[in-house]
Length: 169
Length: 279
Image 1 (cartoon, rainbow over the protein chains, first blue to last red):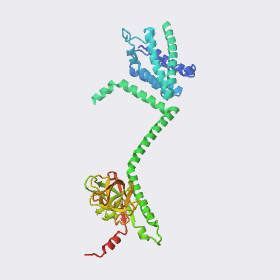
Image 2 (image 1 turned 135 degrees about the vertical axis):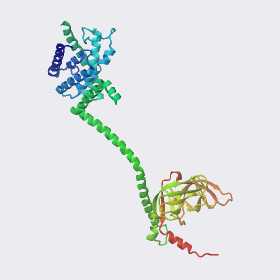
Image 3 (image 1 turned 180 degrees about the vertical axis):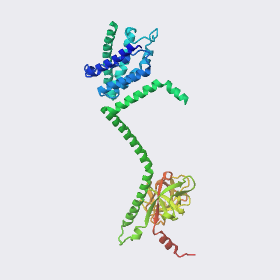
Image 4 (image 1 turned 90 degrees about the vertical axis):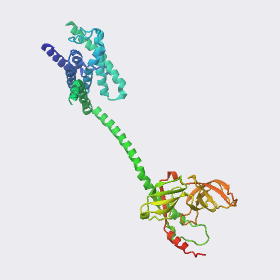
C-alpha cells in the first residue's frame, strides 16, 4: 500500500466517521433501518491487511463511534467481531480461481454476487450483534434481528451506491 | 515455557480478538445504565437463588441439632403429662389427694441411641447418658411411641438398656379398655411382635385394643403404651388367651429415647425389701 493510498485510507476513515456521528446519528427509517457507514473502511480494507491491525483499527473506530452514540463498548464489540469474521467469510466465498493477493474488495474486481454476499454477511453480523447487545433482552430477539436485517439491507443499498461511484472513477 | 510462548505467539490474533471483545463487553456493562442495571439485577437474582440453596443445605444439616432440641422439649412435655395424669383424681368417693412428691416422681431424660440390635434373641441398646446424668440401672426407657426397655447397667457417660425384645424381659401390662392385667413378653423372633400372657380365657379381649403398662409396675410409669392387640387365640393348655400384639415402638428406626427417672424408686425398693421373709 503506497503512501498516497494510505493517506486516502485515513481520510476515508475520518470522513465516514464524521458523516456517521454528525449526520447519520439521528437518522433512521421507521426506527428499523439504521445506517452505519463507519464500517465501510473496515469492509473495504485490502485482503492482505494483517488481522491484528484490522482488529485494533476496528476497536478504535467502534470506540470512537460509541463515544458519540453514548453506547459504550457496543460498537467496538460488534466491529471487532465483524472484522474477525472477515477471513472465515473470505474462505467461505472463495472464487473459482482463488484470491489475488493484491486485489481489493470492490465491485470492480469481484463479481457482484460475491461482493454483495460478502457485504451482506459482514453487515448482518455487525448489525444483529449490535442490536442484540443494545437490547440485552432475549424477549426482544425477534425485533433485534429484524432491525439488524433491515439495517443490513439499507447498508447494502448505500454501500452499493458508494461502490458505483468508485466504478465511475 | 518456550512452548507456551510459541503457542501464545501463534494464537496472538485470537488473543487480541479476545482481549478487545472483553474490553468492549466490560465497558458495555460498566457504562451503559440499562445494561448495568440488567447486570446487577441478573447477578443479584443468581446470587440470591444460590444463597437460598445454601440455606436449604444448611437447614438440612441443622436438622440433627433441631432433632435434639425437640427431643429435650418432648422430655419436658412428657414430665408435665405425667404430672397432669397423676393429678387426675380417679372417680372415688373416698377423699383422696396426691402428695407433691408422688406427683412429681417421674422425670424423663432425653437420650440418643448410639447402638441397638433387633435381630438376636437377646437385644440391647446403648444410649449416650450415664450416671453423670443421674441414670441408674433399673430405670424405665420409653420412646415417643411406646415402651423400649429398662436400664441394665451404667457407666459414667453411657448406659446399656435391656430391650423388651429380650426373651427374659417381661413388662407388667394391662388392656386399656378392660383393665385386664397380664404381662408382655417378646416372642423371640420378629422385632414387631410380642405376646401378652396370663389373661384368662374367660375375660373379654378385642382385637385392636391397646396394651399399656399397668399401675403395679415398679419400673414403668402407668399407662405407657406397649402395643396393639393383633391376633387372638387360645393357649395350648386351654386356660389363657394367646394374644399377639404389635409393638408400638419401631425399634429399627429408634433415634431418641426417654429414660424415666423415678424419684421414689429407692423408697419403693426399700419398702419392698422390708417384706418379712417367710421361709
